Length: 181
Image (tube, rainbow, N blue to C red; front, side, top):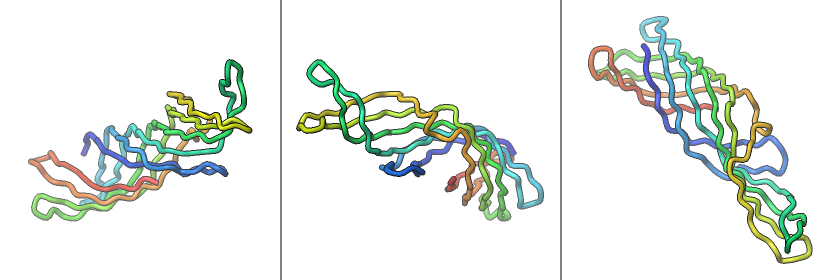
C-alpha cells in the first residue's frame, strides 16, 4: 500500500547545555510518501520519506555589542529564539493491524525514525540593559543560522495508534496519533 502523508505536529526543543531553557511549543506540518509492505495478514513493515517541519522556543543568557549614543557598548540580557527546523526523515516501523471491523481497521505502530537536518533558522529577540544604567531595549534578528547549534542527524523512537477507514476498494483514509521522540 502506498499513500500520501499530511500531518500536523506540536514540537519542542530539549536543550542539552546549561542555562538554556525550553520556552514552549511550536506548531508544524509533516508531509511525504508512506508505504506499508505486508509481511503477514495483519502485520506490515511501514516506511516512507517524510519532510518534517518542527522546532521550538528557547531562552538563554547572552551578551552582545549594541548601539549606545552613537558608539557601541556591551549589553547584558537574554536571547529568546523561535527555532524552525527542517528534516528529511525515513521512518522504519512495524504496524500491527486488527481484522476489519465494519469499514475500520485499528493499528498500533512502533519503530524508529532516521532524520537528516537540512535547514535550521531562528528569529532571535535579544533583550538587554547596559551595565550600570537603566538603558535597555530589544534587538530582533530574523533568519539567524542555527545549523551549528543543531545536530545534523536525528534518531527517534516512534510509537503510535490509529485507524484505517476503507473508503472503497483499495482506497483508505488513515488517521492516528503518533509520538516521535
